[in-house]
Image (cartoon, rainbow, N blue to C red):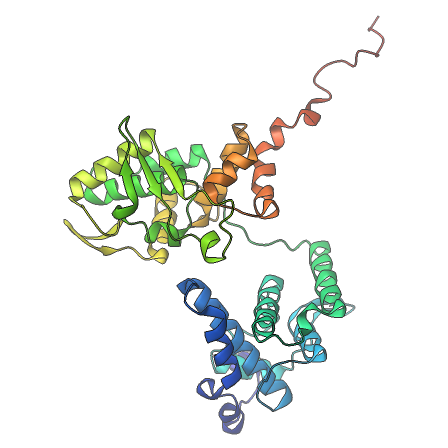
Length: 367
Protein backbone atom coordinates (compact mmCIF):
# COMPACT_ATOMS: atom_id res chain seq x y z
CA UNK A 1 0.00 0.00 0.00
CA UNK A 2 3.05 2.31 0.02
CA UNK A 3 2.34 3.21 -3.59
CA UNK A 4 -0.92 4.90 -2.53
CA UNK A 5 0.59 6.45 0.60
CA UNK A 6 -2.69 5.61 2.35
CA UNK A 7 -3.25 3.89 5.66
CA UNK A 8 -6.01 1.31 5.75
CA UNK A 9 -7.27 1.06 9.33
CA UNK A 10 -8.33 -2.15 11.03
CA UNK A 11 -11.76 -0.60 11.51
CA UNK A 12 -12.09 -0.07 7.78
CA UNK A 13 -10.95 -3.61 7.06
CA UNK A 14 -13.49 -4.96 9.51
CA UNK A 15 -16.20 -3.02 7.68
CA UNK A 16 -15.34 -4.66 4.39
CA UNK A 17 -14.72 -8.30 5.31
CA UNK A 18 -15.62 -10.37 2.25
CA UNK A 19 -17.26 -13.08 4.34
CA UNK A 20 -19.76 -10.54 5.68
CA UNK A 21 -20.72 -8.99 2.38
CA UNK A 22 -24.42 -8.63 1.62
CA UNK A 23 -26.53 -11.71 2.09
CA UNK A 24 -28.87 -10.30 -0.54
CA UNK A 25 -26.04 -10.31 -3.10
CA UNK A 26 -25.20 -13.93 -2.30
CA UNK A 27 -28.86 -14.85 -2.73
CA UNK A 28 -28.94 -13.04 -6.05
CA UNK A 29 -25.97 -15.12 -7.21
CA UNK A 30 -27.81 -18.34 -6.39
CA UNK A 31 -30.96 -17.18 -8.18
CA UNK A 32 -29.12 -15.98 -11.26
CA UNK A 33 -26.97 -19.04 -11.72
CA UNK A 34 -29.46 -21.78 -10.81
CA UNK A 35 -28.52 -25.02 -12.56
CA UNK A 36 -27.84 -24.06 -16.15
CA UNK A 37 -25.02 -21.53 -15.88
CA UNK A 38 -21.48 -22.53 -16.73
CA UNK A 39 -18.68 -22.46 -14.17
CA UNK A 40 -17.18 -19.41 -15.90
CA UNK A 41 -20.50 -17.58 -15.73
CA UNK A 42 -20.87 -18.51 -12.07
CA UNK A 43 -17.47 -17.08 -11.23
CA UNK A 44 -17.96 -13.86 -13.19
CA UNK A 45 -21.43 -13.19 -11.74
CA UNK A 46 -20.32 -13.96 -8.19
CA UNK A 47 -17.29 -11.71 -8.59
CA UNK A 48 -19.40 -8.86 -9.98
CA UNK A 49 -21.98 -8.99 -7.19
CA UNK A 50 -19.28 -9.36 -4.54
CA UNK A 51 -17.67 -6.21 -5.90
CA UNK A 52 -21.00 -4.36 -5.89
CA UNK A 53 -21.54 -5.34 -2.25
CA UNK A 54 -18.04 -4.23 -1.20
CA UNK A 55 -18.19 -0.95 -3.11
CA UNK A 56 -21.66 -0.14 -1.76
CA UNK A 57 -20.64 -0.93 1.82
CA UNK A 58 -17.56 1.25 1.51
CA UNK A 59 -19.32 4.09 -0.31
CA UNK A 60 -22.48 4.34 1.78
CA UNK A 61 -21.60 2.56 5.02
CA UNK A 62 -24.52 0.12 4.80
CA UNK A 63 -25.00 -3.33 3.22
CA UNK A 64 -26.34 -3.38 -0.31
CA UNK A 65 -30.00 -4.26 -0.77
CA UNK A 66 -32.10 -4.49 -3.90
CA UNK A 67 -33.58 -2.54 -5.45
CA UNK A 68 -30.50 -0.34 -5.69
CA UNK A 69 -31.25 3.31 -6.38
CA UNK A 70 -30.65 4.87 -9.77
CA UNK A 71 -28.39 7.43 -8.08
CA UNK A 72 -26.19 4.64 -6.67
CA UNK A 73 -25.79 3.04 -10.11
CA UNK A 74 -24.85 6.42 -11.58
CA UNK A 75 -22.34 6.91 -8.78
CA UNK A 76 -20.85 3.45 -9.43
CA UNK A 77 -20.28 4.38 -13.08
CA UNK A 78 -18.63 7.74 -12.43
CA UNK A 79 -16.57 6.20 -9.62
CA UNK A 80 -15.02 3.65 -11.98
CA UNK A 81 -15.04 5.10 -15.51
CA UNK A 82 -12.15 7.41 -16.35
CA UNK A 83 -12.91 10.72 -18.09
CA UNK A 84 -10.69 13.40 -19.52
CA UNK A 85 -10.29 16.70 -17.68
CA UNK A 86 -7.86 19.64 -17.86
CA UNK A 87 -5.72 17.85 -15.27
CA UNK A 88 -5.77 14.57 -17.22
CA UNK A 89 -7.87 11.45 -16.69
CA UNK A 90 -9.92 11.40 -13.51
CA UNK A 91 -12.64 9.36 -11.80
CA UNK A 92 -14.63 9.71 -8.60
CA UNK A 93 -13.76 6.65 -6.50
CA UNK A 94 -12.25 7.96 -3.23
CA UNK A 95 -8.60 6.97 -2.83
CA UNK A 96 -9.19 5.52 0.63
CA UNK A 97 -11.98 3.25 -0.62
CA UNK A 98 -9.93 2.32 -3.69
CA UNK A 99 -7.03 1.28 -1.46
CA UNK A 100 -9.39 -0.64 0.83
CA UNK A 101 -10.84 -2.62 -2.07
CA UNK A 102 -7.32 -3.54 -3.20
CA UNK A 103 -6.15 -4.55 0.30
CA UNK A 104 -9.13 -6.89 0.71
CA UNK A 105 -8.38 -8.37 -2.75
CA UNK A 106 -11.80 -7.43 -4.05
CA UNK A 107 -10.12 -5.19 -6.61
CA UNK A 108 -6.93 -6.19 -8.44
CA UNK A 109 -5.24 -2.80 -8.59
CA UNK A 110 -5.99 0.85 -7.83
CA UNK A 111 -7.44 3.14 -10.46
CA UNK A 112 -10.43 3.10 -12.82
CA UNK A 113 -11.90 -0.09 -14.23
CA UNK A 114 -12.07 -0.98 -17.90
CA UNK A 115 -15.30 0.20 -19.42
CA UNK A 116 -16.13 -3.39 -20.42
CA UNK A 117 -15.83 -4.41 -16.75
CA UNK A 118 -18.16 -1.64 -15.63
CA UNK A 119 -20.69 -2.55 -18.34
CA UNK A 120 -20.57 -6.22 -17.26
CA UNK A 121 -21.08 -5.37 -13.59
CA UNK A 122 -24.02 -3.11 -14.36
CA UNK A 123 -25.51 -5.90 -16.50
CA UNK A 124 -25.15 -8.42 -13.66
CA UNK A 125 -26.86 -6.06 -11.21
CA UNK A 126 -29.58 -5.51 -13.81
CA UNK A 127 -30.21 -9.25 -14.05
CA UNK A 128 -30.42 -9.51 -10.27
CA UNK A 129 -33.24 -6.96 -10.33
CA UNK A 130 -34.98 -8.69 -13.22
CA UNK A 131 -34.96 -12.04 -11.45
CA UNK A 132 -36.45 -10.49 -8.34
CA UNK A 133 -39.02 -8.65 -10.49
CA UNK A 134 -38.00 -5.31 -8.99
CA UNK A 135 -37.78 -1.86 -10.55
CA UNK A 136 -34.52 -1.94 -12.48
CA UNK A 137 -32.31 1.15 -12.05
CA UNK A 138 -29.83 -0.15 -14.62
CA UNK A 139 -32.42 0.22 -17.40
CA UNK A 140 -33.26 3.83 -16.60
CA UNK A 141 -32.65 6.26 -19.50
CA UNK A 142 -30.11 8.28 -17.48
CA UNK A 143 -28.00 5.19 -16.75
CA UNK A 144 -28.13 3.93 -20.34
CA UNK A 145 -27.26 7.40 -21.63
CA UNK A 146 -24.31 7.72 -19.25
CA UNK A 147 -22.89 4.36 -20.37
CA UNK A 148 -23.38 5.29 -24.02
CA UNK A 149 -21.52 8.57 -23.49
CA UNK A 150 -18.76 6.72 -21.65
CA UNK A 151 -18.36 4.36 -24.64
CA UNK A 152 -18.20 7.30 -27.04
CA UNK A 153 -15.62 9.10 -24.89
CA UNK A 154 -13.48 5.96 -24.66
CA UNK A 155 -13.55 5.56 -28.44
CA UNK A 156 -12.55 9.21 -28.93
CA UNK A 157 -9.56 8.58 -26.65
CA UNK A 158 -8.57 5.69 -28.91
CA UNK A 159 -9.51 2.96 -26.45
CA UNK A 160 -10.61 -0.33 -27.99
CA UNK A 161 -11.44 -3.70 -26.43
CA UNK A 162 -8.33 -5.90 -26.25
CA UNK A 163 -9.32 -8.70 -28.61
CA UNK A 164 -7.31 -11.84 -29.15
CA UNK A 165 -5.45 -12.12 -32.43
CA UNK A 166 -7.40 -14.27 -34.88
CA UNK A 167 -5.87 -17.61 -35.88
CA UNK A 168 -6.74 -17.98 -39.55
CA UNK A 169 -5.58 -20.78 -41.85
CA UNK A 170 -1.93 -19.63 -42.23
CA UNK A 171 -1.47 -19.21 -38.47
CA UNK A 172 -3.16 -22.54 -37.78
CA UNK A 173 -0.90 -24.34 -40.25
CA UNK A 174 2.17 -22.75 -38.67
CA UNK A 175 1.06 -23.95 -35.23
CA UNK A 176 0.26 -27.43 -36.54
CA UNK A 177 3.79 -27.62 -37.96
CA UNK A 178 5.17 -27.40 -34.39
CA UNK A 179 3.33 -30.60 -33.36
CA UNK A 180 5.59 -33.66 -33.60
CA UNK A 181 4.71 -37.36 -33.43
CA UNK A 182 4.89 -37.52 -29.63
CA UNK A 183 1.77 -38.14 -27.55
CA UNK A 184 1.62 -34.45 -26.70
CA UNK A 185 2.17 -33.45 -30.32
CA UNK A 186 -0.62 -35.73 -31.53
CA UNK A 187 -2.97 -34.39 -28.88
CA UNK A 188 -2.23 -30.75 -29.64
CA UNK A 189 -2.56 -31.28 -33.39
CA UNK A 190 -5.94 -32.96 -32.92
CA UNK A 191 -7.06 -30.33 -30.42
CA UNK A 192 -6.16 -27.36 -32.63
CA UNK A 193 -7.76 -28.88 -35.72
CA UNK A 194 -10.88 -29.96 -33.82
CA UNK A 195 -11.40 -26.56 -32.14
CA UNK A 196 -11.05 -24.74 -35.46
CA UNK A 197 -12.76 -27.12 -37.89
CA UNK A 198 -15.82 -27.85 -35.73
CA UNK A 199 -16.78 -24.18 -35.81
CA UNK A 200 -14.25 -22.28 -33.72
CA UNK A 201 -15.12 -23.86 -30.42
CA UNK A 202 -14.68 -22.00 -27.14
CA UNK A 203 -12.09 -23.18 -24.58
CA UNK A 204 -14.84 -24.48 -22.31
CA UNK A 205 -16.46 -26.41 -25.17
CA UNK A 206 -13.18 -28.09 -26.14
CA UNK A 207 -12.52 -28.99 -22.51
CA UNK A 208 -16.02 -30.49 -22.24
CA UNK A 209 -15.76 -32.45 -25.53
CA UNK A 210 -16.73 -36.06 -24.79
CA UNK A 211 -16.25 -39.17 -26.91
CA UNK A 212 -19.87 -40.11 -26.26
CA UNK A 213 -20.86 -37.25 -28.57
CA UNK A 214 -18.42 -38.12 -31.37
CA UNK A 215 -19.76 -40.28 -34.20
CA UNK A 216 -17.81 -41.66 -37.17
CA UNK A 217 -19.26 -41.16 -40.65
CA UNK A 218 -19.38 -44.09 -43.12
CA UNK A 219 -17.68 -42.00 -45.79
CA UNK A 220 -14.95 -40.87 -43.39
CA UNK A 221 -14.66 -38.12 -40.85
CA UNK A 222 -16.81 -37.44 -37.81
CA UNK A 223 -19.84 -35.56 -36.59
CA UNK A 224 -19.52 -34.07 -33.13
CA UNK A 225 -22.75 -33.30 -31.27
CA UNK A 226 -22.24 -30.14 -29.25
CA UNK A 227 -24.38 -30.76 -26.20
CA UNK A 228 -23.10 -28.00 -23.92
CA UNK A 229 -22.59 -24.66 -25.65
CA UNK A 230 -22.95 -21.10 -24.41
CA UNK A 231 -25.85 -20.63 -26.82
CA UNK A 232 -27.75 -23.55 -25.30
CA UNK A 233 -27.04 -22.32 -21.75
CA UNK A 234 -28.49 -18.95 -22.72
CA UNK A 235 -31.67 -20.74 -23.78
CA UNK A 236 -31.31 -19.76 -27.45
CA UNK A 237 -31.95 -23.04 -29.26
CA UNK A 238 -34.39 -22.15 -32.05
CA UNK A 239 -31.60 -21.79 -34.61
CA UNK A 240 -29.10 -24.07 -32.90
CA UNK A 241 -27.51 -26.82 -35.02
CA UNK A 242 -25.68 -29.02 -32.52
CA UNK A 243 -24.15 -31.46 -35.05
CA UNK A 244 -20.72 -30.16 -36.09
CA UNK A 245 -18.76 -31.91 -38.87
CA UNK A 246 -15.07 -32.70 -38.37
CA UNK A 247 -13.68 -33.64 -41.75
CA UNK A 248 -10.50 -33.94 -43.81
CA UNK A 249 -7.18 -33.24 -42.07
CA UNK A 250 -9.00 -32.42 -38.83
CA UNK A 251 -10.63 -35.86 -38.82
CA UNK A 252 -7.30 -37.55 -39.65
CA UNK A 253 -5.56 -35.78 -36.77
CA UNK A 254 -8.34 -36.70 -34.37
CA UNK A 255 -8.28 -40.35 -35.46
CA UNK A 256 -4.51 -40.52 -34.97
CA UNK A 257 -4.78 -39.08 -31.44
CA UNK A 258 -7.57 -41.47 -30.43
CA UNK A 259 -5.69 -44.47 -31.82
CA UNK A 260 -2.39 -43.73 -30.08
CA UNK A 261 -3.98 -42.58 -26.80
CA UNK A 262 -6.31 -45.59 -26.70
CA UNK A 263 -9.22 -43.42 -25.56
CA UNK A 264 -12.64 -45.03 -25.95
CA UNK A 265 -14.82 -42.98 -23.61
CA UNK A 266 -14.84 -39.84 -21.52
CA UNK A 267 -13.06 -36.58 -22.20
CA UNK A 268 -11.63 -36.26 -25.70
CA UNK A 269 -8.62 -34.15 -24.74
CA UNK A 270 -6.57 -35.09 -21.67
CA UNK A 271 -3.55 -34.11 -19.69
CA UNK A 272 -0.42 -36.11 -20.44
CA UNK A 273 1.88 -37.43 -17.74
CA UNK A 274 5.07 -38.42 -19.58
CA UNK A 275 3.70 -41.32 -21.64
CA UNK A 276 0.38 -41.69 -19.81
CA UNK A 277 -2.95 -40.05 -20.54
CA UNK A 278 -4.47 -38.34 -17.51
CA UNK A 279 -7.72 -36.51 -16.69
CA UNK A 280 -9.51 -33.96 -18.85
CA UNK A 281 -7.88 -30.67 -19.72
CA UNK A 282 -9.35 -27.55 -18.14
CA UNK A 283 -10.46 -24.53 -20.22
CA UNK A 284 -7.41 -22.66 -18.94
CA UNK A 285 -5.15 -25.48 -20.12
CA UNK A 286 -6.74 -25.29 -23.60
CA UNK A 287 -5.89 -21.60 -23.77
CA UNK A 288 -2.34 -22.30 -22.58
CA UNK A 289 -1.83 -24.88 -25.36
CA UNK A 290 -2.93 -22.35 -27.98
CA UNK A 291 -0.56 -19.73 -26.56
CA UNK A 292 2.36 -22.17 -26.34
CA UNK A 293 1.96 -23.40 -29.90
CA UNK A 294 1.69 -19.81 -31.17
CA UNK A 295 4.98 -18.99 -29.42
CA UNK A 296 6.62 -22.12 -30.82
CA UNK A 297 5.45 -21.08 -34.30
CA UNK A 298 6.98 -17.62 -33.69
CA UNK A 299 3.68 -15.90 -34.40
CA UNK A 300 3.30 -12.28 -33.35
CA UNK A 301 0.10 -11.25 -31.62
CA UNK A 302 -2.06 -11.68 -28.54
CA UNK A 303 -3.18 -15.29 -28.87
CA UNK A 304 -5.53 -17.27 -26.65
CA UNK A 305 -8.35 -19.78 -26.72
CA UNK A 306 -10.71 -17.30 -28.41
CA UNK A 307 -8.24 -16.83 -31.27
CA UNK A 308 -9.49 -20.04 -32.90
CA UNK A 309 -13.09 -18.88 -32.74
CA UNK A 310 -12.48 -15.44 -34.20
CA UNK A 311 -10.09 -16.97 -36.74
CA UNK A 312 -12.71 -19.43 -37.97
CA UNK A 313 -15.14 -16.61 -38.82
CA UNK A 314 -12.40 -14.40 -40.27
CA UNK A 315 -11.09 -17.21 -42.50
CA UNK A 316 -14.62 -18.12 -43.56
CA UNK A 317 -15.23 -14.54 -44.69
CA UNK A 318 -11.93 -14.51 -46.59
CA UNK A 319 -13.01 -17.60 -48.47
CA UNK A 320 -16.42 -16.16 -49.27
CA UNK A 321 -18.47 -18.41 -46.98
CA UNK A 322 -21.91 -16.93 -46.29
CA UNK A 323 -22.45 -15.52 -42.81
CA UNK A 324 -25.46 -17.81 -42.02
CA UNK A 325 -23.35 -20.89 -42.82
CA UNK A 326 -20.58 -19.71 -40.51
CA UNK A 327 -23.05 -18.88 -37.74
CA UNK A 328 -24.56 -22.36 -38.03
CA UNK A 329 -21.12 -23.74 -37.17
CA UNK A 330 -20.17 -21.25 -34.46
CA UNK A 331 -23.65 -21.11 -32.89
CA UNK A 332 -23.56 -17.35 -32.71
CA UNK A 333 -27.21 -16.29 -32.38
CA UNK A 334 -26.54 -12.56 -32.73
CA UNK A 335 -25.28 -11.15 -36.01
CA UNK A 336 -23.87 -8.13 -34.16
CA UNK A 337 -21.54 -10.32 -32.10
CA UNK A 338 -19.98 -12.02 -35.13
CA UNK A 339 -20.14 -9.34 -37.81
CA UNK A 340 -16.89 -7.65 -36.74
CA UNK A 341 -14.86 -10.79 -37.45
CA UNK A 342 -16.78 -11.42 -40.65
CA UNK A 343 -16.21 -7.91 -41.96
CA UNK A 344 -12.52 -8.01 -41.07
CA UNK A 345 -12.05 -11.23 -43.00
CA UNK A 346 -14.02 -10.08 -46.03
CA UNK A 347 -12.81 -6.49 -46.24
CA UNK A 348 -10.43 -7.13 -49.13
CA UNK A 349 -13.18 -8.90 -51.10
CA UNK A 350 -15.61 -5.98 -50.87
CA UNK A 351 -16.34 -4.94 -54.50
CA UNK A 352 -16.44 -1.31 -53.41
CA UNK A 353 -12.74 -1.54 -52.58
CA UNK A 354 -11.85 -2.02 -56.26
CA UNK A 355 -13.40 1.09 -57.78
CA UNK A 356 -9.99 2.30 -58.97
CA UNK A 357 -8.89 -1.03 -60.44
CA UNK A 358 -10.31 -0.25 -63.92
CA UNK A 359 -10.85 2.94 -65.87
CA UNK A 360 -14.28 4.49 -65.60
CA UNK A 361 -16.24 3.77 -68.79
CA UNK A 362 -17.32 7.42 -68.96
CA UNK A 363 -13.75 8.70 -68.68
CA UNK A 364 -12.36 9.98 -72.01
CA UNK A 365 -9.45 7.96 -73.38
CA UNK A 366 -5.93 9.27 -72.93
CA UNK A 367 -4.36 11.06 -75.91
